[in-house]
Length: 128
Image (cartoon, rainbow, N blue to C red; front, side, top):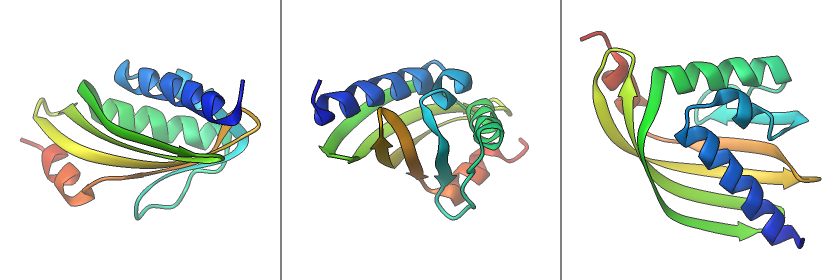
């Protein structure tokens, strides 16, 4: 499998895990020394820390709708623009555009930074 096809397959698995709110499957796609972060926040760099951040994010904002606008792969990097419909713990539902910057190394995610409107997310997650 060529590098582009390999990255495409990893992305398919990553977004299937996100759509299913399965943090453990998502975390398993990362390299041992990978970095994961939300724009503006420190990156999680250890396996346990990455899993905790993913579990928290998936619990705080459960995906209930998903539409991928585009996926651009330029090995070893990719960018994915998608729109999600989310349900916060407080029961509120909201939609938001997400842009993920991903780097792949040796068949695993080496780095993923996700960009979204964090102020909007905080307002959606605020107690009702």
